[in-house]
Amino acid sequence: MAASNNVLEVLDQDALLLSIHDLYPYWGSPKFVIAHDTFKTITTANRYILIVEFSAHERRLAVHIPKYIDDDDPRERWMSLIIGPLKYLKHSLPDRPIPTVHSYSLDFAPPVKVPYMIFDWIEGVPLQAFTNESPPRDARYRILNDLSDFVLDMSLCPIAGDTEGILFYGRFATRATADC
Figure (cartoon, rainbow, N blue to C red):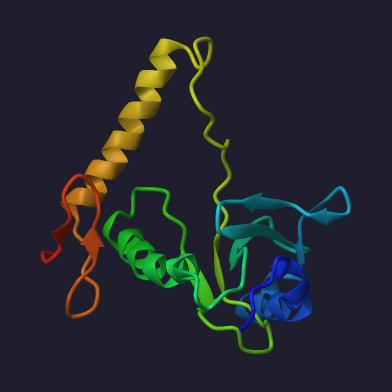
């Protein structure tokens, strides 16, 4: 498939919304959150996160889609590498706010035409870089302790993947083999 600079034009929005509706028809009609006449998105280096809300339910879902469509770009393989770990962490660390993966497609096939992953939207405040003034020192310690607790929980609960397992990458790459 040829590279595209605007995956949002390739995405079949109606087909994606229908897929979401089929998951939870009793939540009412799903729609993308729109801000300033366009999708409200969170953009990372290689993907968009679209927010979906429902007419009869307060819950929101998020949809990850690639930012670029290029079969030769290794950054496009990110989704298959996070679905398994997210599912496993959700099961293994139930007290942590880990989103549930509801549905996904890893290919460019119709009807949606782009890979996607549908998961829980978790409300919160986006992390910002610390400055000299903000946040206050006690809040910094609390934030860093919470993050370190979460990373430690993940490292103590190795992810069992396929027959070879999944690698944790950090200072040293180690093969995860044990279960929690």
